[in-house]
Length: 482
Image (cartoon, rainbow, N blue to C red):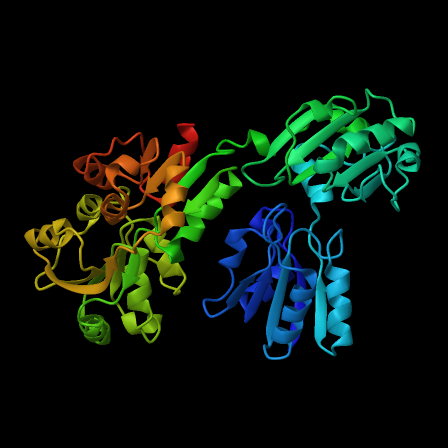
């Protein structure tokens, strides 16, 4: 039984360390604070107990004494307890105190460092905290202590140190800090910058001077940088093509991560509001089980989605059971799902729709058979077209899709979004049924013409349609239309 004090990093969930992500993925309990990113919590296993101890300025707070008690209580009964803390647990955080409490209680613990916003936020704003030959040192200081009162910080001495001064948690006391630094000898014209929500899609950067930064609207959480480097702007993050866009992802929770990751790397804020859940077909999978058992008797097996691949291959003993059977995938996403089971598709059409697969499918030999494993609700274009071409086709339901009920958080997320993405007709139908067409964000993007047709039938105006009917194609279309 171990308690892990894990640094969550500066905000971007991809900036957690490999060790931190590994522990989070097997945690029994996650005790997290306000600055931990919600997307990180989704990396915890479904059974994990999530305990919020967030400290909100001016709002309800969990006393540190109670947090210490929770760590001890859970540390005594659970194998893996993750204390997820924003930034680094030992940089202006209470990680040192928590470690001491665990030590005194005789509970094993480990500290997993995190990337501090003191370095990451300026970097995301294009501000290097050091420069060779000019700014050769940096000082990180908490702004939590009031310079007008008795303090352990000698701000005038800090001003004389030279180099770069980085102030965390200093927005509320910035006027007094600025005055103290000027009293210490820093020129009012010294460059100064504030970076709010550094590394996140809502990042905001303000560049000014020591005397004028306070004239701007500053807000927490911000990292303040004072020194010559604050005038430098080698920005890259805020120049990403989708920076700041809130994009609704309507795929299933299990599938949404791939699209969300691509969006985040382009500067967008993915808002995961799944409109589909995948469940067993009405027969509990009996027909699929029987089809898998006799799969070697078919000439072709056809898959029209990664979900169908997943359901089918989980029942397959291994790839050798296919024997001489050839395999078709409707598109690259489905082909990639097959590769994860060490199966390479023999056919992937250029047009990633049923009509494209029909065009690419070979003519049958006498008595040739096809097994089509797909969703219960799928269109009949593919099986009907194959039969018209002379194939004998067995259609087996691999899964059903249902619409999860949205909650108040989902509705608020949709209301504040800029773009909604639809990756299938089911996502469109379920979204409109759950939220109404009038609740759609200003821009609607679809993965291809079939999904577009469904959207228009339901009264939605489609602004962006992918020409390559895949997740990569949808992302490329969003970038091209920005």
